[in-house]
Image (tube, rainbow, N blue to C red):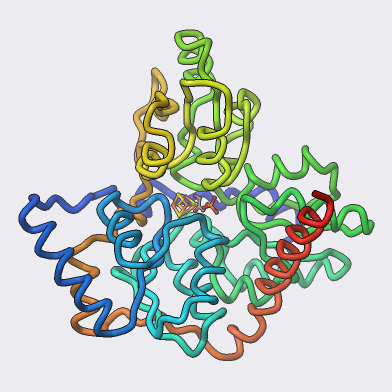
Length: 356
Ligand code: 13P
Ligand code: SF4
């Protein structure tokens, strides 16, 4: 395919490719029994849960109570690498499990459901992407964390939502031309912020893509005192109205630190659990996903994140099923792009500490 054909083609998923968001329903007694059994298994197997903010609150609570970790995709990877546990149970989506395995090849990585994928990962087929990169050998290849291990293996850099602007700014300052994949909205936002020369793959997150600019304007008119916090996987019409654009961790921090009591939040509703924990007195409002002429499909909760559940978690601990495996050659090549980001963010943090 030519460059124009790739850049003008949508890599968004079709409706039929998107599973419904189904959250496991359990009563209090079963929840308590499952939690107890899981805690015992974790101890026995020297295992910890590493969960994303978008997973169900009961999984986040269990991770926190049992010495595990709840965070954004970058921090989940860091925690998993540094943990002494022999087994990591990654409650999140496929790319998070793969990244954990790549960074900790000696550890056993299990996931409650191996079908938990991501529309961005699915919208960036390795062969097509690799051919596209081959036709632009003078470009640095930067991919978002939400990609397969094989796509990361073809990249020079992996970035996350919390690090993308800084990394691209750094590359642009060195005069580099960039291939960006797969999220078109995040790519456009980063391009606008940095002015970098970027070829942008046309993938999208099915959850964030549903936030509606016009309806957000109407909602803001009803709540003129609310601050608007937006994840950068959202469309430009939504990002344009933001008081703050950032990663999941960045959004939680903003609610805690900003001098306001009301917030409109444009990201997966799974994040509300941690925000309420960190800032119980603040008022949180979901950004609108359905317009006058549209109904939402994911309705601001990722169908793949919702595949993680207590019942499935106990099952994998009891059976050892759902091991995440990554081909050794792919893992070795992908390590380079992931490690480059970890080194970059570490250097940035120590620079900041030095400046303080
Ligand atoms: P964060 O890196 O901000 O946690 O985002 C991951 C993700 O999948 C957002 O949809
Ligand atoms: Fe992927 Fe979007 Fe789900 Fe995040 S919320 S895992 S980007 S589909």
